[in-house]
Image (cartoon, rainbow, N blue to C red; front, side):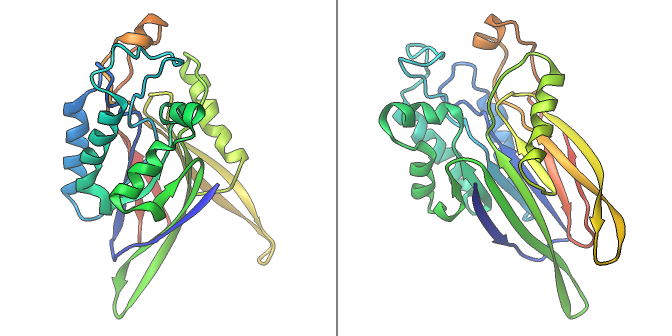
Length: 256
C-alpha cells in the first residue's frame, strides 16, 4: 500500500472522479463517453481524478482478450492513454495499475502506468497497487483557512461474480483492510454507491462516536458485447460516479 498526500486549494467542496476500465484498444471502447468524462472534469476547478486501472485493454497471447481483435497495438494504446490524460494531468491525485496493464508486467516485467505517470510528470501520484490517499482542502473563514482532511483507500480490484450482491460484498471487504472515509474499487464494471455506519470508541471522552464510510464501485467505458455477453454478464451502466467531499464540515457523498 502506497501513501499519497495532496494539499489542495481552498474549495468549499472537492469533487473526485474515479476513472477506470476505459479499455483503450477494445473494439467496444466508448470513446465518446471517455471524452465526455474528461471535458466534465475540466468544467470546474474543484474537480480531480483518481485513475484506477485498466485504462488500456492490452490483449496478449496469454490473455482472455483477443490479441487479433484489438483496434490498435499495446504501444498505440499507451500513446492514446497519454493523450487522453494529458489535459487533466494536473488534476490526477492517484494513478495506478489494473489487471489488464499487469498482463505486461507478468510477462515482461514492465509496468505500463508507471511509464504513463513518468511521461505525464505525475510520478509522485503513482501507485503500483493499493493506495491510501490523504487529501486536505478547505474554505476560508475570515482570516483563517481550516483544511479538512480525508482518507481514501483504493485499488483496481479483482475477482468476478455475475450477481450485484457478490460485487457489493467485494466492495465492503475493503474495510477489513484499513479504516478510511472513502473506499474505491473498480474491475467489476458496475457503478455502485454504498454506505456503512458503525460506532467508534472514543477513549478520551468515554463515548461512542457514529462513523459513516462511503464505498464506491466504478463503471466501465465499454459498449455491450464481446467477452461480457459471451459469458452471460448483464449490460452495465456507463454512468460514472462522482465523489463529493465537504470542506467545511466532515461529509462524504457520491452521485451516479
